Structure formats: structure tokens, C-alpha cells
Image (cartoon, rainbow over all chains, first blue to last red; front, side):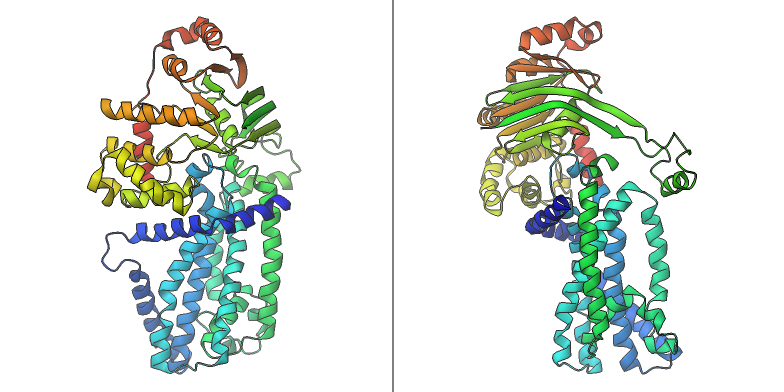
Amino acid sequence: MASGISDLRAGLVAWRLWTLLGWHDIRQRYRRSVLGPFWITLSMAVFTILLGVIYSRIFSMDIAVYLPFVALGLIVWSFISSTTMESANSFTDNAGIIRQIRLPFSVFVMRTVWRAFIVFLHTIVLIIPIALYFRLPIDMNTFLFVPGLILLFINQVWVSVVIAIVSTRFRDIPLLIATALQILMFASPIMWPVSALRDAQFVAAVNPIYHLMEIVRGPLLGETPPLLSWLVVIMMCVCGLGLAAMLLTRASRRIVYWL
Amino acid sequence: MALISLRNTSVDIPIYGIGSSSLKMTLLRRAVGGSFGTSGHTLTINALSGISFEARDGDRIGIIGQNGSGKTTLLRVLAGVYPPTGGDVVVDGTVSPMFDISLGMAADATGIENVHICGALWGLGKFEIEQGIADVVAFTELGDYLNIPVRTYSTGMLLRLAFAIATLRRAEILLLDEIIGVGDATFMKKAQDRLLAMASQSRIMFVSSHSMEIIHDLCNKVLWLYQGKVKGFGDIDEVIGRYLETPANAGGAAAVISAEPAATLSAALSTV
């Protein structure tokens, strides 16, 4: 356990390295395009407007309620799904470095998470025009967004560490995750409101994605996230970080041989 | 003081991809109680076995041996990236592993940006990188090229930059894996001088090479690896003498300066 914790701590200390590498990945991806990373912003804007207009009719909801809901849902979901999916390659993509320079393994995971976080920042800005246009309330609840986002980030760190390790050893896992995420997206209250479940509310309650959604999306929509969601996410972070440290301890001497 | 001590060190590298790395095989093996597949064990390669030696301040050790004898694996063990699967390894001192010097180079970033990226990878601090830029500018003589993406560079220019960055960091233990070799004559001279300066500042140096000339020039001891085991360690002339007497090595004894660095450099760049 000790070596896993020290790997995580050393990874955190090396924040300058992974922020640099993560930021550079983004620049590399959009180099020489005119809009650059704002392509992400643009595509998310078009997607949410279309979805907002069409699905608000399907669910016969007011567009002023539904569009902000679905926009935030998709933005948060893409952060969750991209960290989960891309972390599968955190070690394999950095195989050259891992075979040459001794660095904490968590550095490579943080590179992936940070890259996804930069994308998230490019899409979350859409909340500003949405809030202005639909006059979303700004009150004390709004500020709960900050602790919510921090918890979401921590949660995605441990998820990514676990997935990176397991995927390096078992190469079927990335494929399994891609499938699972697709199913999970439709099974989670991202595009549909929980109220639409009517008497089957438990379907949302047992879904960890729902609780992650609530603590980030809720505050921005002017709602107070339920206490249960905070507790569930905090529990997930604590247990998850423990699991990540345990796996790192067990695997850190083998990861390089799995590459 | 720097110290390296290996006692009975072994490295067994598991080979996956023959089915055993997939989840299916593991689950199947679980389900049928370990009788499935290759008796439940993964195929492994004995890359190093029973390696024991010590290196102290002032040691300049040349590693020789045929392809596949474990030279690179040993260097990776010394760099701390291959944890030994058996025995003990003590490496006391900061290590600079120069195996692939173009590591981390991003084709679409400018020369200066690459100094920042690679410098950080090599473990340099922000301040050291800022200071190192002047050094890189002077050494590479690339001038304005440093402000345009490195994908426009020629192979020689890329190597200059990579070499300049990789040699920025001063470490107590220097590990070189066959990197000397490309560039025009004047640059070669400069690169050699810089490498020698770096080598003289390091406390312990390991050089793996097929060129007995390079080993003679740079080293004061030789470690001869054969099929993952130490076949000879110590006096340079004595060990090289015995090495060359082995029929298999006599033919290839002439200085083989490989063109590999250029190939790996462009390969590395095309993948980033």
C-alpha cells in the first residue's frame, strides 16, 4: 500500500510535468486548425442545441428547463467518459518514456485526466451563454459547483488509475469499457430527467453516474444536490483512492513488463 | 559518492499476446482450475540471470555482448525502470539514462517548446530549463529554426537538438546505449566533446556498444554479457581479448557504428 500512496503523492508533486504534457497533447491535436480546441466548444454547442430543441418536445418539457439540463449533462458526461476511455491507454501510449525514465506511474494517468479536463473547460464555458439566455438563477447553490467539480476530478483520477493498470495487463478491458460506456450513457440521467422514471427512481439512485452528475450539474441549474449524492461520491473517492493505491502497489513492479 | 551494486539480479520478462494477456484466457484458466493453456504459467524470457557486480566512483564500464545478450535490459535495470524479478539492485545516485535521446520530442512543437517538454521529462526544473535554452541555442547552432516546428528539421538537425536537450542534465550516473553516430563531421566532434565533458563530470558511466574502439576510448572496465549472464568483468584488454577470441564475435569486431539513432529518431517522431 505504501508504495502506491507514494507513487500517487509523487505524481501529484510532478504537476508541472503532467499539466505541460496534457496541455501539449491538446495543442498537438488541434495544431494548424483555425479554431483549434474551440472546435470542441462549437461541436458541443451545436449538439446541445439540436438535442435541446428536439428532445424537449419528446419529453414535452419547457426548453428553458431541458436545454440547460441536457447541455450540462453532456458536458459532464464527456469528461467522465473521455477520462475513463482514454486512461486505458495511459501507460501504453507512454511506453517509450516508461521504459527509459523512472517516473511515478500516476504522472501518465494525470496527463490523460488533465487533457480531458482541458477539453471540459472548453465546453463548460457554454454555461455562460446558456445561463444568460435562459436566465438561470445565480445564488448560493451555484457555488456548490466548485466542491462538486473537485470531487468529480478526484473520482476520475482513481477511476483512471485503476483502468490504466487493468487495461495494460488485460487488453480486452479497453474494448469492454467502450461498450459499457455506450450503454451507461443511455442508462444514466443525462438526456432524460430522473422524474421521467416515475416510480422507478431507484434506477438512478443505484447509478454512480447519477450522483456524480447531481453534484456538478445540480448547482449550476440552481438546485441543491441531495445529501445522498455528496455522501456517495465522497465514499467512492475514499474507497476508490484506496483501491487505486492498492493496485498501484501490487502492479508498479510489473507494469513495465506488461507494456 | 555514487554506488551501484547488483547481487544475483535476474530479470524474467513475461511474454503476452499469445492469448494469455486476454481476459478470456485468465477467466477460462480460473474456470477450469488451472489446467488450461500452458499449464497456467506465462511464457517468460530469461533476459538476465544471476548478475552480480559493483561499480564505484570513477568506474567507466563498457557493456559488450551479442545482440540479445541483455545489454539494454541491464541498462534499464540500472535506470530503475526494470524492477528485478530476482536478487537485489542498489543504485545510489542520480541517474541519466540516454537510450533514446529523442524521447518525448513532439513533431509539431517548435525547438524551444521541445526544450521545455523534453527538459521536464528528463527531470529538469523550470529554472534549469530557462537557463538551458541559451546552452541549447549555442550548441545546436540552429538559430531561427528553433522557433519553428521540429517536423521541418532534417534528421541531422533533429539529432543536434535532441542531443543538446538530453545532455543538459548533469547526473552522477550516466547510462549510454549506443547513441554515438550521426551528423556531419564538425557536429560529431562537438557532440563527442560534449559527451566527454558530461562523462568526466559523472561519477559512474555505463556505455553499451558493439564498437571496441568506443569502449577503448571511453571506458576503464568492461562487462561482457552472454545470454543474460556475466561472462567477464574487469580489465578492459583482458575481457575484450577473450571476447574477440570467441569465434562468433571475431568477425563483427570491427567498429560497428550503427545507423540506428537516425532510424529511431524518425520513428519516434512519426508516432508522436
